[in-house]
Length: 301
DNA sequence: TAGTCGTGGCA
DNA sequence: TTGCCAAGACT
Figure 1: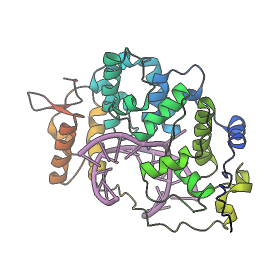
Figure 2: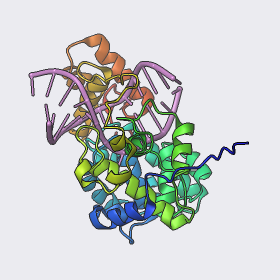
Figure 3: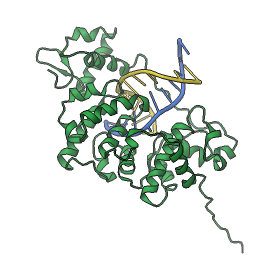
Figure 4: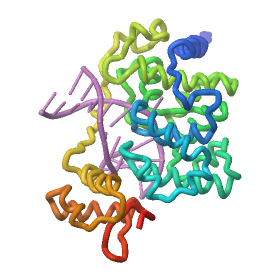
């Protein structure tokens, strides 16, 4: 009788190799430094959502000086926070971070929680950010899955050209299987995996010649096939509500006090879309209307 | 699950 | 020039 053995092939991602590479090539970003607080890590993770490192750096440094603790940020007004967010984009993140800071100050003794489940309960913190904070601020073992990690795993492990549509549960299970057992090493591994996707295993033209995983990469062995999954929908921007909201908010960021509606009307020609966007900004709490009918950043009137 | 939510650099 | 892309969360 034949004996069929299921042999798990070794992972194409050797933790030692990846972690060593990270130690040599990884960037010295300030939120990775040993003196960076958990609060600093949390702020960086929120700012980095869908936003390039180069744009985050100066704003993060400014925030750490101005608001070095959750309670410090909680003491600021919403308007100050939205203004200091500048043009990082997706300004609702600033309001959610302000809310999260208040909750941390009030309910957690001004200490950023280390438990994933508790982090998940805070506004603006989802599956990625909760685990990123647990791993990078507290050295916990947790599957940290962002777009970089999804792409690296798709290629190195699955031999695909790129990651398919995201599925949080499946994606996290994939990464969980790769994580070293020990907490601090798992956290280091997670940072290294992200860095590899950011610097080498990039979306457009991956630098495979510089990749520490080159010899074991499933995508290499498969002959680097093109991405075969469903087409990803590209997000339009020009002419969308997002653009108009951005233009409206930018008027208030660039002004001291409340402004009359006429100052906002000039940024977009189509009145219907303009008013709809203004309404949505009011609903989101990014803008407030004064009793005189003027418009201002929240709290700045 | 799919749509929405900013902004700017780069190929 | 235009489209792609960048450490996601929320509904």
